[in-house]
Image (cartoon, rainbow, N blue to C red):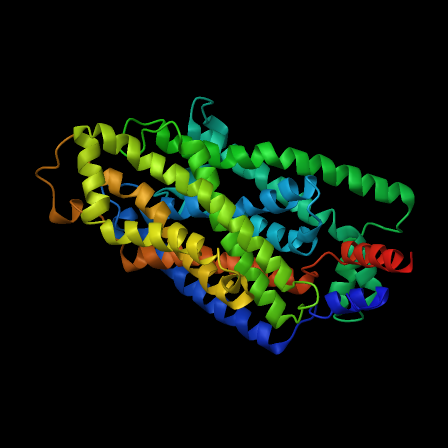
Length: 437
């Protein structure tokens, strides 16, 4: 890094400002959100009948979306906790980006569940009269806990940066005041640094079992039923490995955007894209193993229900979506990322977008097709009960959750530096001492 110690702070705080382009972007997102909320108001007034869900397929895009959001939120644990605790120094510039993404997806995941409720005013009953035997109560508990820990893990390392920022920034005044309040009289004393490091280490250790629990419990919502396609003992690790793939894709997209638009090429380098590509290949290979296991075992036994389900997703109604998810979400990225040229920023962006979209399709394939083949025969029902088809209102409400995530990421990335300033300064100091010696 060619920058001086002070220049590091100036570089990383430069994007922290309100400019016209971001206000326009937020305005577009706000308008789109209100349009989607109007669609939700129709559902709230008319009931879930305006969506594509029916008696047989009662979980559609909404629950697929919930599973995807929970999956994407696990990236904070992988980057900050797992790689951070084992001493991977190269991930330092990416930790805050991963935590912002994790917090945004985890926070909105709870709202996604509400979109699937016909009577959302009854949500408090879950907490007031919830039964400990219910996996849904477990899910709500771990999601809430994960959001809280993710928020703390984002805030604590931010405290020293806030103290630096209130000296550098002179406008807008509300932001300087916000920095002053949130920095909690940070002076950088030895005792304060010890508290920060100890607290961060406790949170990094604590978030690992909570993050594993959040997606394992989500998988139990499916696996605890005898339905064909869900009745599996590997759903826990299968969901977790798939979550890492989706989360890494999110981080790569964010890395490219922040690097290009915030001019952070000196801090988010091609080395980071190369290492993230290798990490993506590793977790994708693990995920590929679970995908093979998911279909090989029931395919080998080929019981009656499994035969109908596998035929549907392999060559039937849902085959197109299934093969798109498998090819573009796992197989093709693994092959292409073996070549160094594909591990450059722009090719990585294209692959990450494909993986991101394919990961959502994969959740749809997990949730919907198995409900289209119930144990009881479908008879004496309207034609639209036979095959699930999302409606425009359902699609709009689903898009609202993605808009909210984008808004949270946009606001946080403009209020605070997306790369930890004090950690980059610390890294610069170590390099300077190494050069002098």
